[in-house]
Image (cartoon, rainbow, N blue to C red; front, top):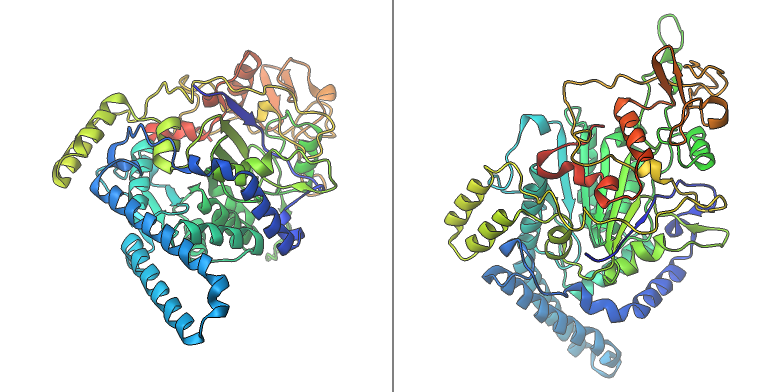
Length: 547
């Protein structure tokens, strides 16, 4: 397996600023063009390697009739758009009526081919087929959304959501980011990144996601983004952070593949939790905060709102990015900005944990899902064999395969690989990064990562900062924060969190029993595998994380 590097998420500080909000749009555009130019030699790696196609015709480059038809249309669009752009300089030598006729002919032809790829504009979403994943009562409170990247028509979008449904055992709703051909899609990416241009696809996805967040029956929303979809997703998150109540964003989790964005925002809910995280990056759950709000009641007394919990104190609890080192789009996006350990006054803001695989390829199903979340060998054989059969027979084979409990290989090379770059966060790290203890999700397979719907979290004690014995301190300046001074409270060895064993009860800085188990397991770890750090892996085969 190719080497895998892991980069913990930024914490955030006044030094970390989104470039899209502070830099000149022209400067950003020129820098994007320069970044694309210096990485141009990696452009062929968008489609390479061409094999293997283990998911059958769900893979974009599998030689099925529909896939070959889509590829042929994209080739025609590529040469047509190249000819159009190269002809622009000679327009000044031609009569206006010739230019007008030529432009009209090009535009009609381009739109017609795009219509064949995308279908009607009246259809903006596609639900995964029921034979790939059925709705289950255990997942009724979840909503899975997917926003695709460049060059994806309706057929490839359907393939992507079906593969996601098969992988994670839930129905997936795909929001269509319509393709205009590879060249025009890349130009649109540059405009969206540099000028914050909100296309129709972004506005449609925003309305859908906002509606799901406000739905009281949905308590967990998983947003999967690929390529250009991550640019659009980052803009949507900016809008949500500016408009909706922040506690609604606690429902959201974001996972990206081949991320092409130039920023990813995810601020802390409170200044106190950010300060604690910067001071003690190895402390998990340093974010337990309680907001005290005075409401106008009949007695005009203060009403204490419920405690808000999440593992890192951020508005969005979980963001993960998966990228290939030699993927042109990843080098243009997440790797370029996340690797930038800038010593300048302002560093790029790119929140979320990053898994970098020293490999190439940008296709969502064939290159990312098939390598990182490979299907079981028996299911792969069924998919490949069904690709040569008629559609009805194919559906029957997939339905039969759904009878199996495990669709995803439980021992894949990627998830079982040891990550490189293990080391502590530097004390003078300007970006401020969480430490490995915060990233650790548990030993996959020991049962700790699977959610028990009937079990309530039992350990929610808070050790107040000014409380000597480590017990909850109640109200303090509107916040009841976790104790972040290990020297004052740590009487029993731990991973750096504040713990105190007293009269048979372990008091922690806001950690529940699941977090305590992970903390104990972390202390015994000598090396970390991807599955110890990847939250998305915990959703495989219809499973769920504990929290």
